[in-house]
Image (cartoon, rainbow over all chains, first blue to last red; front, top):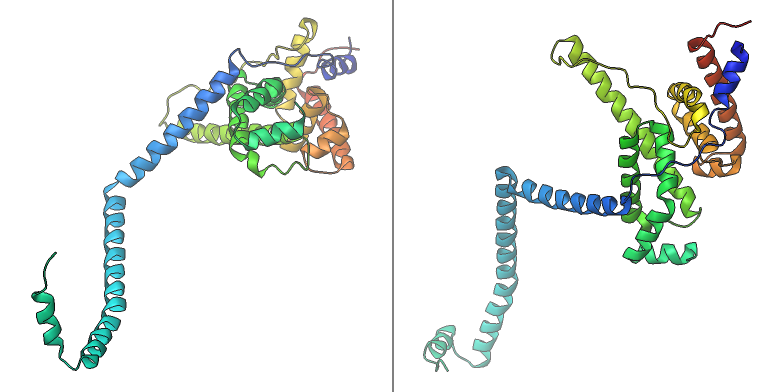
Length: 109
Length: 191
């Protein structure tokens, strides 16, 4: 056989070949891999938030957001209620102290 | 089950539909990966990755192509990525070896024997697979899809998202390159 024939034989060596198949229980292995990847992703997330720098930063962020929300709420609720108290006091021709007295001496039930 | 129904079921997370898809296309995916990677364990690994990705991204599948075409596309891209990663690792290991940080002996992988090749052709096929290893990525993918999976030019163009004439050109260059590699490497005394 000369070079040319040899090369031709090599080039046609895949003719008539059959499809290769993975080992048995391939589907089971795919499902196992999916579960493993889910677990890995979850444990990765837990590990990330367990890092001291991340944990402290998240806590600080939560604290700041709470403080901001509290101050915003206080400001928002504080002004109208003072106005309301004042207008109520004007309506009843009395002072705010009277209202306080009323609140302090009201029946708790 | 027709493809439209299957895709709808897959999008709804139907486990039976997923099992059906895996068992229907596992050989096709594995054989394509094996043809590109020439390593049974790596091919199994990539085939598993392909189905995991399909499960996760089926909602993005717009059915502009057949499901099998989409599977071929994911498989070729993942298999070629796998080769690139392996090459990077090899280069890194080689540098470590040069600097004496890694004392492992670098060994050439043995000849690859595809289980589907007829016995008489085993030796020649191993030579051809060794030459396929040297092809550029897109030529390798086109050649494997054509020779191992029997896809025609139109189908290959859909998988590789290119034109039919580009596929013709890819396959022509692939065959020329293979011949050149074989002529250089396997000069047999003759004439």
